[in-house]
Image (cartoon, rainbow, N blue to C red):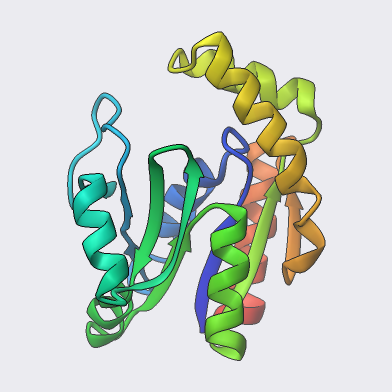
Length: 185
């Protein structure tokens, strides 16, 4: 069973997933998404994302190379390459898709019972705003766009198999580990 994890930006999904990977080191392989955005400090091509040009992204769309993709903002694309599933499955591991909400829904529709989907919810929008500001990566404009998008994404939470509210990181990780034991292993 593959695992789909989605959440509004700043909800803690990447932090939770890193702890889950530590707890289950031989179970999962991280599906590296492709994006047209610039790398953030410390991010590496091929590890965090495949950082590609809009032109290369469009070539991949034309070649039907994506399981799913989305234009999140004007000129900003994210997508899951089909080759990632093949890479991970051939190593005997289960794929983990750390994707945006629409991507998660689309992957679930494509994979059906071969995937379990988890939505990580912030406790509230004020906490989400504080977390995003603490990153120091957002302009006022990008922060407002992310918060507006978060409201839309939260409205899709019921499309996922499970919802975890990340108000306390340790509790959220424990709940997530229980999901892995119950539905993935």
